[in-house]
Length: 236
Image 1 (tube, one colour):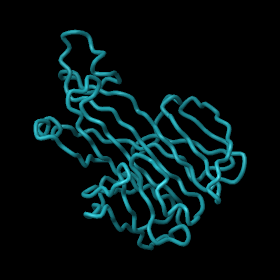
Image 2 (tube, rainbow, N blue to C red):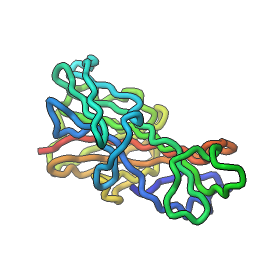
Image 3 (tube, helix red, strand yellow):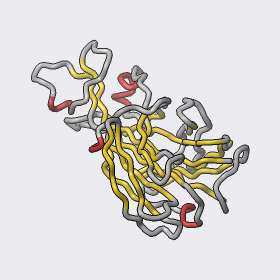
């Protein structure tokens, strides 16, 4: 996903050169009774299970369901005790630093680099997602994620070909000017001044996502906090 970035003027030049694509982390809606937590851009990738820092499984009445975890060689799966309606996840992708002329960033805090290392751009990606398996009226309200999409005007899960209005919030406030993509297609409409955007629902899995970067002046571990929100569901 291409970045939509909040810049500090002093960092604009450095961030302009950043071309890496962000990744999402979400629960696969095609599972059941075992559901896999996926991480990646266009193709799911392997990740350490410790990066899944929070997971909530809610039923149609918004009551938490117990679940079991199963570590896999490429990630994590969960088995809810009951019928889930929505999964809410938090995923901490750690600290990353681009050092010198190296093509790949290092998965390390900037403050942990050896003395004398020329450290370039550094980031701390944090990701939130909601996967809806069925619809309930409480899903039209925020659930308290740092950054999240809230569906507007629904009475059921969206159908393929329909128009869907989404409200994007950061710390509970509307977030404007954010590009919203679907399934890592790297293009899409932007949220308006009220944090609203209207998208066209595709048949099958829809994974709407956006990235928002916040510069952190004088932070020793990462100069950029990268926040990702995703909303996932299946449309028929």
